[in-house]
Length: 321
Image (tube, rainbow, N blue to C red; front, side, top):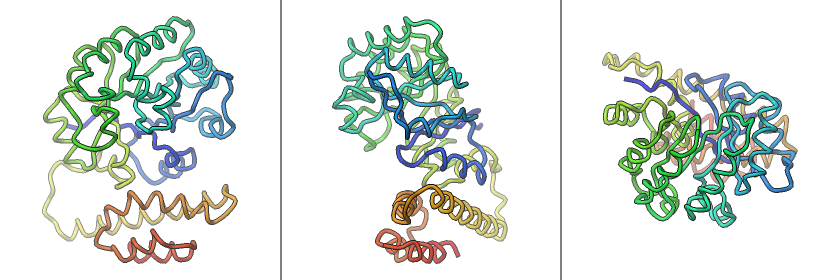
């Protein structure tokens, strides 16, 4: 069994419009992308950077909003709907302290009564596009999952994406799939699973364990292995045992990866003021991607410490040659 839908999670500072455009040229398998969050404030205005990230309308993209002001969220959702977006996603999962301290992201889950009032005010407005939510399974711990589920079930979300960790877990420990079950059991909308899916085997295990899961969201797994969605969706279920074929596939995979990285670097150079900024972007991607090349520690160390694009490019060629 394979998932019916595969989504690309929003990754702040990484999955930008440029990244999405280049990625989709080289890799298949993604049904929908979610934008890095757009912070919405009570002044009813988008920051220029955020506007560039989602406008004009982009096919397969769902804009994600970060807000604790219901009226501001509604204004932004309607504004984006006017641009052609049929779904807007509410971020109730970001665990970062600078976000949570403002009562946004996973901070929305800290006060259940306030969270309920916030959602009630949003859904009291008419003319909204479809509203989905990406949520954690608790703030302090996943024992809060049932209370969160009870609140979510009262509102007409078009989809609920669940990362079954508490905010306090950040990305540590194992996702609590029982908390995922508790939340989904109370919902009447479509649901999506997100959390620690790094290989086709981990996805297959999840679906074998919970056959009802039809939608998955991949985040860090796609940065570690950009071809992960392709492998999940298109690879044969059984290996033929042909070592020569496997070796050829590995070479082809490295060639595609090199082309992807080269194109991405070129695009960043065309839009950024300095090579230093481009280098920072590429290093950030390799902070994930490098996990697939731990046998090239010397070259990975060069990437981490390089101070010029020429050093970076030589190290990448050494790894992918």
